[in-house]
Length: 282
Image 1: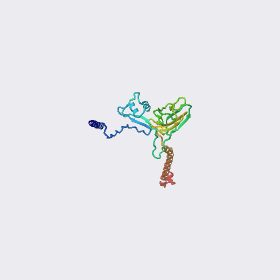
Image 2: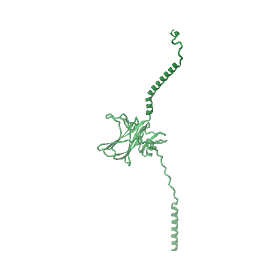
Image 3: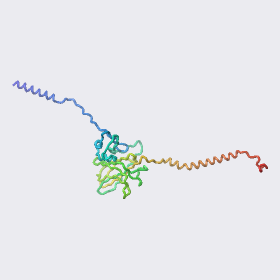
Image 4: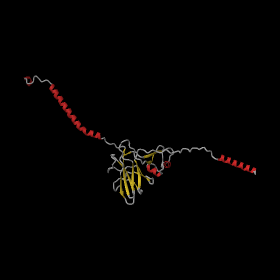
C-alpha cells in the first residue's frame, strides 16, 4: 500500500514537471510597430497628388488611397485606355475638403454662393467652374466653363461621395454653360471640393459646405483665372493719361525760353551809329 502511494506521488510530480516545461516563458515580446504607408499632402488648390513609382499600377494606387479605379480615371482624364503609368507621373488621388489657409490679416478669398431652386421629387446639385477672365470672383455673361477641372460632392457622414469633371460646353438652347450635375442626391450636409486645371489659378475658395433638402436644386459657381492673363496696372494707365498735358506744358515752356533768349540776344546788340545819318540812307 505504501509503495502504491510513493508510485502515484512520484508520477504526479513528474507530470507537474512536464507541464512546467511545456508552458511558454513569461517574457513579453513587444509587438512590431505597424508599417504605414506615406500619405500625400493636399496642395494649395485642394488636390491630393501622388507621384508614380516604378512598378505602380492604377489598381495599386487606387487601393493605396482608398478609391476605385474609375474614380482615379475621373480625377486624371489624360490616362489612356490601358491606364498606363510612368515613374514620376503626377496623379490626382483625392480632393481636400478643407478651405485654403489665410495668412495673417489677409482677406479670405470669396466664398461661392449656392442658389436653391425647388424641383419636385428630386435633389440635384450642379457645379460650374467658369473662366474668371477679370479675376473679380463674379461670373459675367461672357465668362463660360473650363475643361479639365474635377469636383467632388461628399456627405459629411460618408454615405455619399461622387466626382464629376467640368466642361466648357454650352447648351445650344439656353446658350448657358453646361454644369457638372449630381442627380438623385439624398438630403443632408455636404462638402464640395473643386480642383482647377494646372494652367489656372482659383479666384475663389475651392471648397464649400452645402445643406440640401429633398426637392431642392442647388447651383454653385467656382471661378478660376488663366495663369497667362495679364492685368493692366492702373497707376501706369493713369500716368499715360496725363503725359500729353505734360508734353504740351513742356513745349510751351521751351518756346517761352527760346523767346526770352532771342529777346536777350537782340537787347545785347550795340545800336548802329550810322542810323539816321546820310550814309545810313545810302
